[in-house]
Each structure stands twice: as structure tokens, then as C-alpha cells.
Image (cartoon, rainbow, N blue to C red):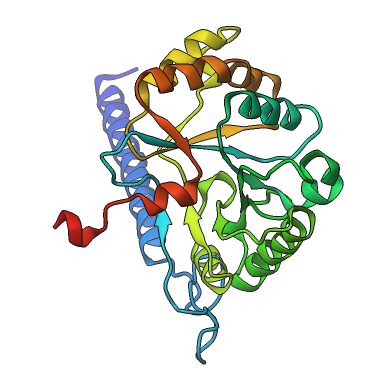
Amino acid sequence: MSEGARRWSRRDLLRRSALLAGGAVFGAVATETWWRTRRLPIGGGPASATVGNRIQDVGSGALTAVWSVATERPLVALTFDDGPAPQWTPMVLDTLARHQVPATFFLVGAKVRKHADVVRDRLGEHEVGNHSWAHHDLAQRDAAEAYDDLSRSHDAIADVTGRTPRLIRPPYGHMGGAVLHAAARLNCRLVLWSLQMVEGQYPDDPAGHARRIVGDVRPGTILLGHDVGPRNRLVALNGLPDMINGLRDRGYTFVTVSTLLGAGVSPAQTG
């Protein structure tokens, strides 16, 4: 190849590289611009916390969402999601009864209907919350769908347990605007959590898992556990006695979520 041809080849390669680089930059800018300019529906859809342009049917029009409670008192709320189920829920209830620990169970409506005998007459010392009808992601539903789902679960929980839930924990902790609207219509507080079990980090080590949780709890913690799910979650459930005793040794008292909310310090008191 001649020197001129080699120079042309180098120039051609540089030009092609510049075009490719420019195309990549343009593509990235175009993608970012698309995301920035993409608009959600003005009305409706999962993100909207309003429905239509008439008066909103949301009861008092006020809604509270909590992750933990501001208190200096050594209180902790133990919560269990996704049940009931005959495999583990009775085991959890038996452990709580032996240690006289109240808890809050965020129940799935379809499972309550299917396994009514598991919880009927066994939740006297505990609190019930709504965890949706079938554990679908409500953040992907519009307000009407989210309300229908949660309302159906409300009815099942009230029918089986004799108590209407006043707390909602959306599956996966996903809170779209539609979930907020539905919760307000049902006059419920949205409850998430500030600490959760970490079963995957302690395979076959219930005592180690319990020590981890005991060390991480702070006054006002809402602690997330599960009484349904993959078998690795049994690490946390088998370690419940150690966790309960460890927290009591630290001076903690177990309460339901609603009791914990009642013990909180209001913003006026902290300002």
C-alpha cells in the first residue's frame, strides 16, 4: 500500500470513528431527552393521586405514611407480611404466644379467605393490616383498580378476623399515587418499615441473624418479617426467641404498630 493510501485509510478511520462517536452521543442525548420530556397522563394512571375533576372521594382528605416513629421510649413494632399460610403462620403465632409478644400482621386477602382457619380466633392480642388482595404490585394499577383490590382484601380480613384493618402496607413498599388515593378512601394509614430481616446474609444461622437484628433496632423501629415465603426465611423465624429475648435484654417492649404510632412525638413537640 502506498503512503498516500495509508494516509487516506487513517483519515477514513478517524472520520468513521468520529461519526460513530457522534452517533453514540446523539443517541444518548436523544434517549435522555425522551425520558425528560415523556409525560405521564394528566389524569388517571398509577402515578395519579386524583381521579377526574370532580370532588375527590377520599374521606377526610388526609393521609399519613410512616416508616418508623419518633420516640425516645424503647418500643419496637414487629410486623409480618404475606400470610397467612398453614406452613409457618401457626409457628409464628405459637412463638409470640409463648413470649407474650403482640405483633401486626399485614394479611393478603386471598390467603385469608383460603386459610381462614389459620388465623380465626388466633389474633386476639395482635393487630391486622391490609397487604392487598393477591400481592400484586399496586403501583402499576390506576386508582380504581388499587381501591378495588384493597377494598376486597379489607372485606375478607374483616369477615374472617372480625376487625376492619386501619393500616395498609402496599406490596414491595411501592406507593404510586393510585395507592395513596385508595388508602385515603379507605381511611387507612400507609405503613412501611425502617428495618427488615436479612435472612440471606445468615444461612443456617438463626442466632447470628437474631443478633444482627437486635443490634440494629432503635426506639420506634417498625421491623419487617414474613410468615410466608422461601425456606431461607425460616432463619429469621427460628431465631425469633433469641431476637425477642435479646431486645428485651436491651430494655425494649414489643407493641403493635398502632400502639407505637400513639407513642410518637408530634412535630409540634419536637419543633
